[in-house]
Image 1 (tube, protein in one colour):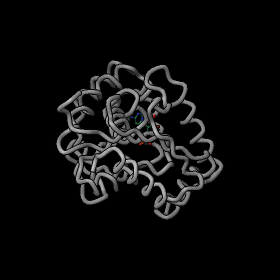
Image 2 (cartoon, protein in one colour; image 1 turned 180 degrees about the horizontal axis):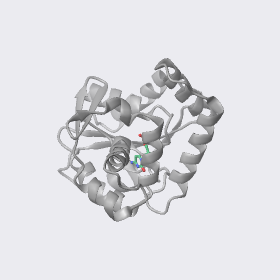
Image 3 (cartoon, rainbow, N blue to C red; image 1 turned 90 degrees about the horizontal axis):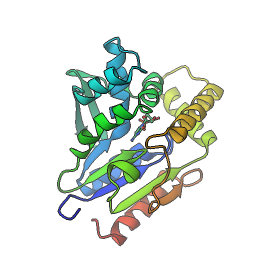
Image 4 (cartoon, rainbow, N blue to C red; image 1 turned 120 degrees about the vertical axis):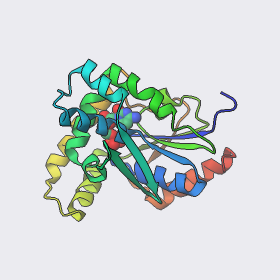
Length: 226
Ligand code: C5P
């Protein structure tokens, strides 16, 4: 794949700090950012808004193929628009996450989003965050990182995030939801959540974001990507 801009693939389950890490690395390098989870979340929201059942594969795939979405980066923040309306907060809701993991099992939906994801690969480079960036979407990425953390720690992080935003949340329910979503992501037939064979695995259960960033910066230098 000589000639194509380089990609740093950052995969792993939700609550591992993937999104924050990807945004910071992209900002530091001055590279583009792909939040692929947001695409699946948008497909779910769009289907619901159009009255399409999330399990209706051909109809959801048709919506995914012409998703009227736009991403605008502002520093570490990514503003997301659907049909011209800002949906940045709605995209991050628990309901959008659950919807995303339902449409994400549908092969036709994944196929419909593939070209769009490849379109984010523009000079000088791309940091891509998701579940299958290193395994399926950008298998030639020169650096693949897989972040993990225990479900308990991820639930606590999510609890704190939601609570800080003034939401009424319940920790056992969040943990249950994370476990259910992990299972759906790991067990699905197409693009299941798993590290690429050449991925560097970083466990963030005890590593803080600063330490994770340091390790990733070192990997970027080692591979001459900066
Ligand atoms: O990363 P995020 O939590 O935003 O992803 C929401 C859901 O979208 C995940 O639980 C997963 O089911 C799905 N997803 C996926 N493949 C990706 C990114 C997200 O299947 N590359």
